[in-house]
Image (cartoon, rainbow, N blue to C red; front, side):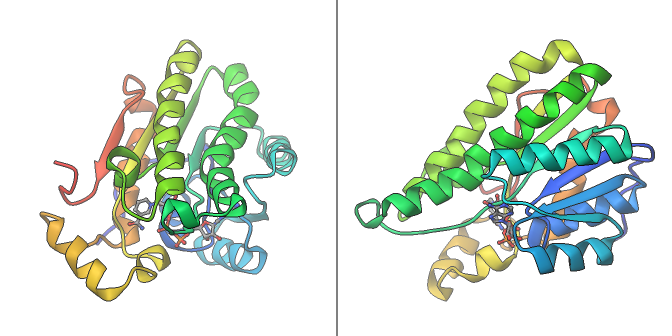
Length: 245
Ligand SMILES: NC(=O)c1ccc[n+]([C@@H]2O[C@H](COP(=O)([O-])OP(=O)(O)OC[C@H]3O[C@@H](n4cnc5c(N)ncnc54)[C@H](O)[C@@H]3O)[C@@H](O)[C@H]2O)c1
């Protein structure tokens, strides 16, 4: 499939969780569309390799660590002079029945997805306000909207991201900043961890009868982060082959 013709020349974009999976394909799409692209991931070796591969700059950062995120944003803004688009995509799974979830499972999952999304968005706001321009795209999930057995922490984090998205959209609308979310379905390492039978069951529920390639998430994320989409804010756009209909 060819690259969608978005133009991000002159824009600075940060994508978290971009060492692999959806995030890496998003970074590839932004770099291909001319953006100065920064890849943030806590997997240091993989994020530098991914950055070399897609034509961006890698930062080894744990998004749950607010000081490290703030420091990365400062470095990015001082070297590129701008910050236009933030994509909060980093994620982990610790799937267990809720009575088996440990304190560590709960705080790790909430820390990456929800606190990570807050950390990077908050760190970007001063630059967004100075520019009177910014685009945030968060990555939530069908599970955040509907729940799923074995995913209490993940569902809570992803539902939290929806509330955060809508609130940030309201708070930042007056500064030329939009905040939206996508709810993806894509074949990544995360999906590979689902047992085969469960995966077949899940696939049968998707009207498109397949999971997407990670690169198929890029059109929606890039669209929501164009200058032209400036009147769209606070939405959760499913990119899920019709699953959430
Ligand atoms: N794949 C799907 O179908 C699907 C469905 C719904 C939601 N999602 C969401 O999409 C996003 C991307 O998932 P994916 O399928 O590409 O998964 P993935 O496991 O392939 O990639 C996730 C990336 O996030 C990074 N990461 C994890 N914790 C981090 C941290 N603390 N700081 C920085 N980076 C961290 C990982 O190192 C990895 O590179 C996640 O938020 C996930 O919850 C995916």
